[in-house]
Length: 194
Image (tube, helix red, strand yellow):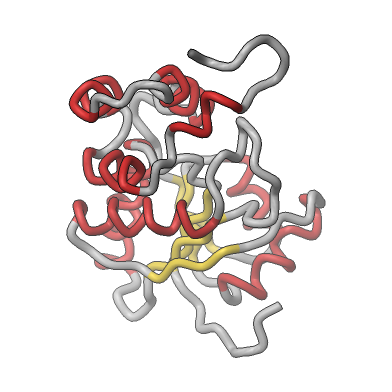
């Protein structure tokens, strides 16, 4: 658990499994909101579930997700602090637990109503952002599309198939980290892809 005093911030929370265009849209909206309404606060991205074992729902570790976020932010042309938060599987205690990592009540910027409600009950100001095309940008859909590409070695093909839902910079970072191939060997029952 961190010991330093963490200043309040505009916080965006997510699992980022992987970082997709929905996340990029939320991050852009969060930065625009922060610049207009709270320029004295930093933008802090909190990567959740950093302690979860790798599986098809959580295929990438915290460092890989941080690298994806850095690639996304570079393409979006702004910076943010990035912190990791281990999960405790206890929603009523989540906000209190998470504050030890992302700091005390500031502003949570989210597109998720349940998360908004949790943080409001924890004494936070919450800015709820509407996201476009939420259905096609659900994490499980993006992961399944990436899984279909997990045995493909043609980088152009990977970019072509995944770029509608993921930023090119993130896809390139994932290719560089060899972050797709493992998806072929993850799953529940049946046979691996390929």
